[in-house]
Image 1: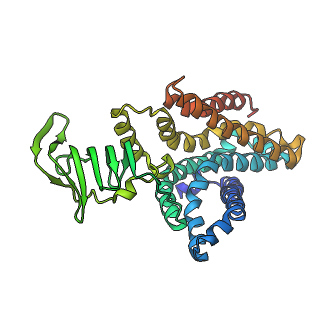
Image 2: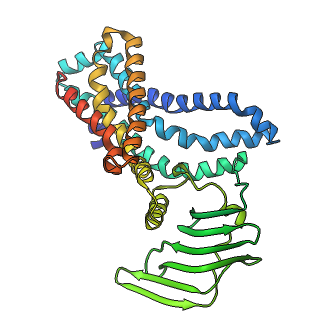
Length: 362
């Protein structure tokens, strides 16, 4: 009974109008991207003799990643068109005449934007795993033609990072090997195993004489020497270790964080990776920020009708995506802190949105 008093028929109507456009945009734009990609690459996939069902499934796995970037635009379109339509048909004016302020009127849209934020955070964690599966289905993993590779890091499964000074395919041996596994506590501790040399055998990689550090807590570090060591989880074949490193799109937030820390210890510039990691949070939150920007603009769409709404939404989306690329470059060069670079588009739209929002007649 109390819930029915809080959520009125007007709230359900406003939310349904927002939700209808949001779902259409959130699914429609990724489908358009998929159709374009199919048109360009279908012949390539067929030349690999991939089954059509496998190709279709790969695009299904691509959907989370495609939706992740478009969610702020979907919120913007849904806000502009739902509020714009209600403005043109004087529904907002009627609500104000009934004592309902503009802020209260669009409260269901805020709820929809919050849902988009939560959905974006989930998609940001799911997409890396579906992207990995998609690449497997399309057989796009390219291996290096070189027989040697030097000074690289490889992100394995289960929170593992391998740092290798030199890998030699001909002899199936490696120099300067370091394995880091991130643990969760005393029952599953973190450890770092280092060795000057390792060789690939039928059981996996056998590391020669080296040192292992077991970290069970913040103040606990157990160190011991070993003559040889088999790590049962280090089973990647030498050819797999020559594969291109995982892209940020193939790692979730925690996995990318571990990879960044490992790369930092090797002296690698990780500014671009730090920007990418923070964008996994910043982009979903932008769905809420973009509402503050779109709602005031939507009240003026009656001047230009649908064409005005489409123009405003598309222009804002393009500007937002351009800002993302620009701040990636700025943060990647270290001109500003990478984490701040990731939030700059949201901050900019948030400041403009709050200014416009405060001027709306309630």
